[in-house]
Image (cartoon, rainbow, N blue to C red; front, side):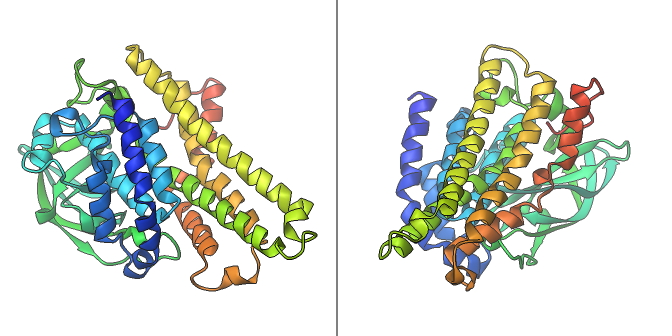
Amino acid sequence: MPPHHIGSSMLERIQALQGLLRANAERARNKRRVPAENIEALQSAGFFLALQPGRWGGHELDPQDFFRMQIEIAQCCMSTAWASGIIAVHAFQIALMDHKAQQDVWGENIHTRVSSAYAPMGKVEPVEGGFRFSGRWSWSSGCDHCTWALLGGILPDGTYRTFLVPRSDYRIEDTWYSMGLQGTGSNDIVVESAFVPDYRTHKQSDGFNGTNPGVDPSSAPLYHLPWAQLFIRVVSTPAIGAARDALSLYTEMVKGKASGDVTKLAQDSTTQMRIAEARNSLEEMTTILMANFDAMMAAVRAGQSIPLADRVLYRYQASLVIEKSMAVVDSLFSSAGGSSVFQGSTIQQRFLDIHTARAHVANNPTAFARNLGAVVLGHPNTDFFV
């Protein structure tokens, strides 16, 4: 079956799970992790195989299909969309790595799940055949559902790599007490002097230059995309789904309050403007997301490289999603009425989740705006995660 048809079929399966995901949202918040039932349902739907290579049972879907599914999940539970999306996108990165690393992860079970924490917190000591690796990392979303982790570290020569570490070499510490995205289970990972063979590392330079050891001319076009372009979108796109749901909740609330008096909210011009502006902003974000990947996939299918200037622009546009989603949910929440301030308010949860997502470094547009402006003015690019 062609990937497009697989993507459409999988999207339908994800949409069929929305009732379950919405019903489990409160449990995710209370347990501070995605319920196992959600993970199992998404696995059965094929979500975690979406970006996995065909030789390892995956579907090699276009990113557009993958992100449409993540948005649908986020409309029900942003925590589930955030954690499951991050887990799923790791299949893409592992596909870029040495085939021996892929064998280690998927050789016995194609459904092996991997979490991450990319901050360069690792202490790295080169040794024969690899590295001695230690450190503590925060924000490893969905780690309780995973048996491997991708962790960031800087070598003595100043270069950055991601280190692929099995569950036997790290422990999880329960630290995730957050104001929003409570259900992501983004706990700490601790590694104490683990040996990581060289082949189980991924160089930032390979991800940037497209010289990944797991990719050759026979690889699917998907794997010729820059790694960063996938990851930066996986931590911003859930906000589109959550903001969409906030707009839906607000619209229904307004209709309900206006039902007994048509001169109230639904006829109020300010309320109408809020809804119009929110709807437009959501359409703009989604259109840019899809257009960026349309352009990138067209380039790699044609055997062409993606211009660096475009990659820098796409990085900046991805970082704006949270800011734009915050503007949407803030506008709606500010006029959602007294009931919205009480614990358990559904629109309040969207507000808290989106604001929490802003804390992720990939969602702070300041540095990316400066880099884009500098590149446009003829200065060299300074961001190698684009």
